[in-house]
Length: 304
Image (cartoon, rainbow, N blue to C red; front, top):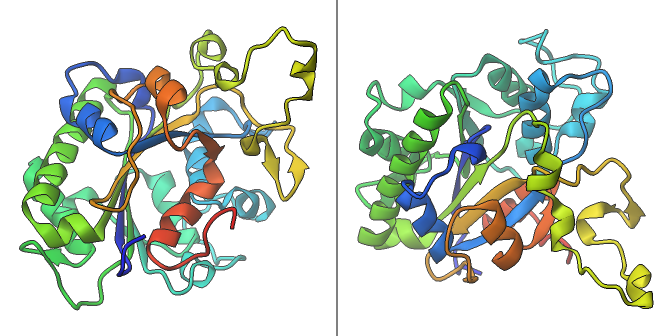
């Protein structure tokens, strides 16, 4: 735990997990130096289709799925609606939060949850990774390697969609490279920035339940006592078994903050490495924002 509250930057690559190759060296380096894990998702509501998974998965990442389901407003159809549930600032002890995206549905959801919304061209009018990294850090109050005493955001989620999978993951990799360079060269950024990279699989495909199964993490035993192995924590909520957990295609998450995050033995940013060696194991995706908010001194420790 840091001796001062951190600022959080979350890079969210929607549907990008499928496109990682050995070429994305900066992503692999981040996974190797940080701590990694899997974020389990729940099944889409029966009324929804795979095309709308972006909005539901992001809502889960922000622990807002229940609010979205219970709301009479659908952000896909009603871009400017009044909130019927607490804002992110109200939920997390005054946490100032922003979302950067070019996706209209993500913009609607973020505004509905009380996030300040920015287009990518408001961060930088260039697609240059160095300028974009500087712009994201500036939202968090970091300028010229220092954390300024400004009315900056505590939490910024930068969303990249899957318009072109290979280009998106390459751009994400370059952005991680620029941020890692800044973290290493400027001490205040390194010690006060909590960086998370979250990659999802997007709409599921035919063999995903075989290739990316969470059941691979469970002990396979022929012992007669194997049936007594308790349900894993990601299948539980408020002490009750959740029957709608999707047992495949979780989100992949790697996190790093200098002298704060623990290390595991992951070597590459991949499902197989994360499920076998990840230090954070598997947690429910809706616990992610609580874990990050704790690092910002805006929420109690998850599970405490």
